[in-house]
Amino acid sequence: MANPDKTIEERILELKKNRNAVILVHNYQRGEVQDIADFVGDSLELSQKAAQTQADVIVFCGVHFMAETASILNPNKTVLLPDAQAGCPMADMITADQLRRKKAEMPGATVVTYVNSTAAVKAESDYCCTSANGVRVVQSIQSDNIIFVPDQYLGDFISRRTGKIMALWPGYCPTHMRILPEDIIRQKKRHPGAKVVAHPECRPEVVALADEALSTSGMIRYAARPDVRELIVGSEVELLYRLKKENPGKKFYPASDKAVCPNMKRITLEKVLQSLETLTPEVKVPEDIRVKAKVSVDRMLAIG
Image 1 (spheres, rainbow, N blue to C red):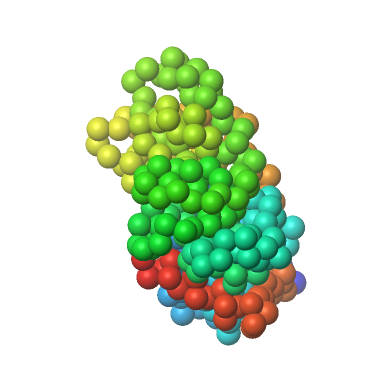
Image 2 (image 1 turned 90 degrees about the vertical axis):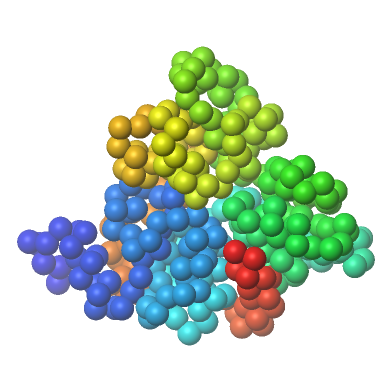
């Protein structure tokens, strides 16, 4: 029975110790969930932490594909996603069957898959990448015959940076799509001294208005620069929680208040506690898919 004298945070920390668990939290999670994390980061950083952990239990506060990636890397550990319904619309925009058909249309093509995808799609891929290392991954490939799935906007950004023409799948992030060029223009008028950063998942017209296009980890490093005092942030609004926490005295403005990912907000402290108490919901990738998917994930991690 729960001890009524302990806060929910204290109960989570006590259970975490008893379970030998690690709590990995994405930058878009609620602020109070970020505060109980062992590590807060973007998809690449969290994948790296999952690959390195000595914990028996991984509590992944993110969305389903992230927990799947942790399961791919840790088949003998218990991977928990505190809300089983925390999915990713972009990941659902392509299936393994659709990718196989695309590969049949382009024989010999190298498939680069954004980490925001299902394990089954990763299993049909040659490389995974994140927004932090996508340019480096594509630059490392000798071939110009490349299929990039599922995010057309990240693919367009990488294509422009590398000069490689890629076949782009028409997927997108609904949250970043809500950020419009007029939002950036309006915020720049309101805050003329502010720098602008945009996530590569944003529309190309939004990226074109930014001083830098960066992953969330890149935005965090950019915000820490001494020459940056004010920053307009073209990404999911919860990122500002961490930016403000780590940079007191600086000012941060969301490019759009509409850039909210409802799936990321499904996880609460109560669900983290329940997940640790019951060791559910567990995410387990079937072994045949896991082995194939791990090849593309390992290549991503090797490039770093």
